[in-house]
Image 1 (cartoon, rainbow, N blue to C red):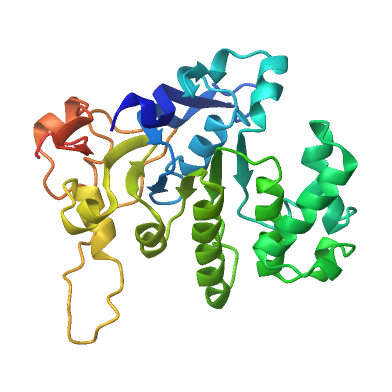
Image 2: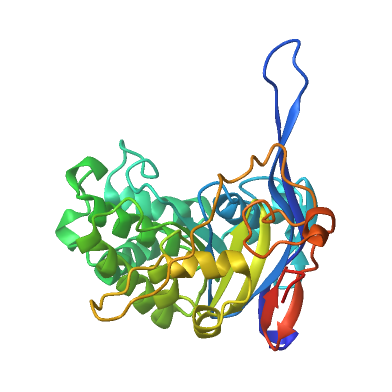
Length: 321
């Protein structure tokens, strides 16, 4: 894809958290995100998957500058947002928003639904009549009856609260939305409704998603491309269909082998990974996956694999592919 279609670009992104175990203890560093580089194209949905603790959510928050990066640069429409001051960031922040995992914790319990949705518009100075008009349209778009606008968050179900959170994220007509496991806290029966809603809204409003999830089936359904993370690093990145049909990295292959197949007559050999995920405080040398990798060599233990293009549009960080 050409650069004219690029909305977000990440270069050498790192986020380290300092930990202290006590007054006399040596400080430890958690390498939550460690040298990520990728781009997100206009209008696409880029899915990010990986086991818990791999740095998915931290990456999403870094891209919106809800967290400050330790190193690296983030470009939004060609502008480096990591160097923006508060005034510049406030001016640009309306263009990128977030849908949170927990719809109850992310909504102010003391505010009515109409106030929750109008608050972002009020912050940027949109006049009252336009705020009201847009709030009502958004309620309709996400499937919340207009008559419910004066209710409080606790009066809604989990699925309805997430719809309200989605409406709030769309209030300023953003160009880029980070959806951080938006269906993980919902009942399975509601998840499909919310996913389909997200797809429909993207078609109507023409924005771009970074979709973070651990459910590989959901990611396959909604994503144009998929990136696989492990211990703060990107292991593989490709078009969705290509990645699911032809995974190159051993870690991706193991993840995909665990997806249930809804056909009793079709069997898939599941790849069992041995051992626990290493601590991000003390990650393995060389390839971070080598301690659990079934095809690891001595080279993997000492040399960090380059994240490179193996086939057109298909990237992987592995010495053996």
